[in-house]
Image 1 (tube, rainbow, N blue to C red):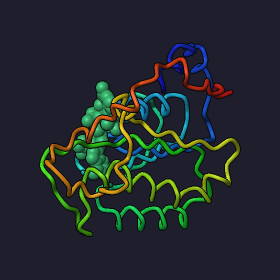
Image 2: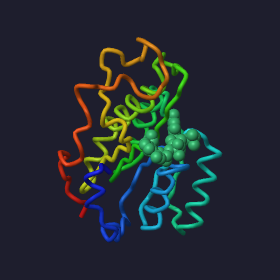
Image 3: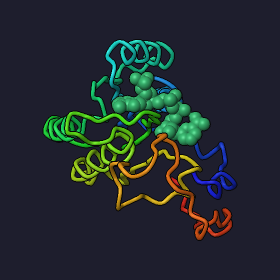
Length: 202
Ligand SMILES: NC(=O)c1ccc[n+]([C@@H]2O[C@H](COP(=O)([O-])OP(=O)(O)OC[C@H]3O[C@@H](n4cnc5c(N)ncnc54)[C@H](OP(=O)(O)O)[C@@H]3O)[C@@H](O)[C@H]2O)c1
């Protein structure tokens, strides 16, 4: 939700059933992802939890099933920093499922030491950018089979003042702290008033 959408948020818009719709949520074992998974399960949706640690995921799944009474909650173990595995998971999911209504790209990380994944890619970039791109692109054909499909990507307000450093995707230039790149003095935060209002889900 952007700041402008927050101004238009109305709690009664959440008053709807999602029975018959399926939702994939990355990083669903804790935080915002877990809260979203529980809320959707309570409203009758099918939930696909994409998590990197089986024990943490199963513990969360058990709690969600217990609290919601909905058993249509499934765990998929995928480390989103491992790009090849994300691609393979998405290919398998498309083969094994007839539809997907909503993808919620929620998982995110902020590693302060520069680490590389199995393909030699910097892990913050692999998890927060490339993994999201690979997962979303791979699932679009499946999403398109659903009525009114959605892709929701959870980000940070800090990213509104950051541009992707396309000349240094692997963060090899300059000091690395894993937080922000170089602030853009020529591109200050323009204020929420300039953001377009998006239509509410019906
Ligand atoms: N909360 C805030 O104030 C805030 C502010 C700005 C942006 N955000 C963004 O909002 C999203 C959710 O925030 P949150 O506070 O709920 O986060 P959180 O509590 O830190 O949870 C992050 C989730 O992402 C998962 N994750 C991280 N790296 C992963 C990987 N490589 N593969 C699979 N799963 C991975 C974590 O799994 P594990 O449990 O296994 O670590 C966890 O389930 C994130 O993208 C975050 O950057 C949050």
